[in-house]
Image (cartoon, rainbow, N blue to C red; front, top):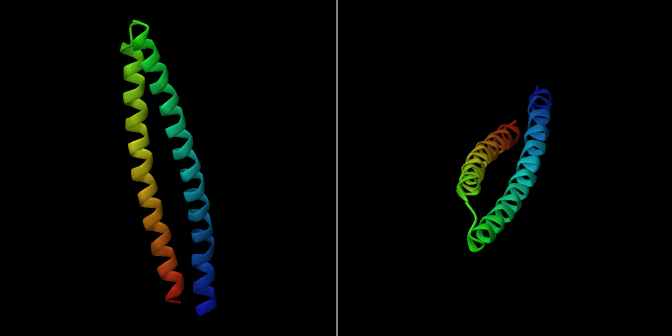
Length: 89
């Protein structure tokens, strides 16, 4: 019975770890995009251009990354839960 329980938790754990790895990549790429947009915004401001839309985009990117990081935290919690379940069987 223990090996069946282990098998029941192994696949979801592999899946969640893959999701976590993808989340890490997506978040890193998101931060790169945000830095690039912030650099563009800075350049536009220095050049005296209207930056309202660029500022809005920077804000939206930041908010999106905050939400992605919150979601990543939930994934980490799920991985920990599955690891605990596997260890107890």
